[in-house]
Image 1 (cartoon, rainbow, N blue to C red):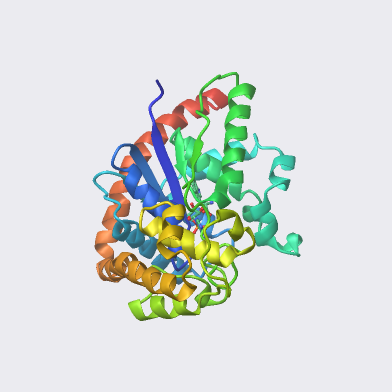
Image 2 (image 1 turned 30 degrees about the horizontal axis):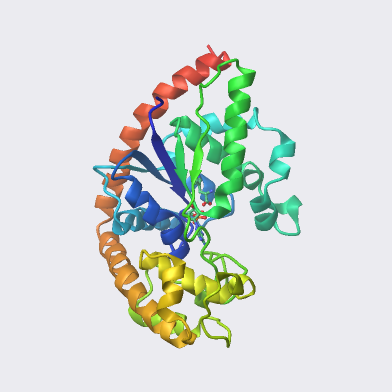
Length: 333
Ligand code: AMP
Ligand code: TRP
């Protein structure tokens, strides 16, 4: 049997939020109990849109702090930043030559992020998915915990791995990585618009719960969160046209580690103010300690830098070993 290895990445582009926590970080933490895991602060991905260097520097450390505060343990998982292991960029180049333009042209995240004026997007943003494939394949990772928004990129990584194995006649060299997507809540939606995902880049801060929000801010944001006038009803199908209601029920269910059906039973017939009160409570209980821990960890930057440095050393050993073989397969001397 092939060795199982978990890899995932988070961009250091500012506020970590509830979507990152429920869609990714929470899963990262539970996986480190039973599997070998690498968790990467993907700073090379971050610069596909311009980042102020000072802010980037601080955001790399803050994302690392967010990993630790969420429960990642550097003695169990390899925690490092992408730019510190040059193999990511090297393999990305090779994969740029494997991936087809047509495959990249289908990527919906590029279309969303580039917006109307594609000509002005960086070339890095266009080939972003190839760098993501390189991150995963550099370690021959088999499992990738991500939110649902990354599913298409994961499929592309599998296609690239398959084409590399076929083109170079090395069947099974790269394993085909499997996405691990949370079943209960694969996509946390905006608190202002249940059809849009909760995101760092959304203008209104009321659309998301940041891991660093104070208890007061959390309560205020949940109070203001959009809902509808109907009470909580039993049939799950009723929620197809009630995205905001469904989102709040899902968030509450995930935080309480219970099925959405159980949550619906708990609040059946009540209006949203009772759900909101309980939701605020559990959010404050779960998120506030993480936020406080991030602030505390950010006071000792040296410690965070040490964590990244140790992670880099461990990651580099695996990366170098695989790269040696990759260079040989491609034919480099
Ligand atoms: P990013 O901040 O874009 O680097 O995302 C880091 C991780 O969080 C990825 O696995 C994303 O899929 C996940 N993620 C980001 N936003 C959400 C969301 N609103 N719901 C669920 N997962 C999310
Ligand atoms: N593209 C991912 C995101 O925006 C971040 C990422 C980069 C990633 N490399 C990765 C996720 C490798 C999983 C595996 O969320």
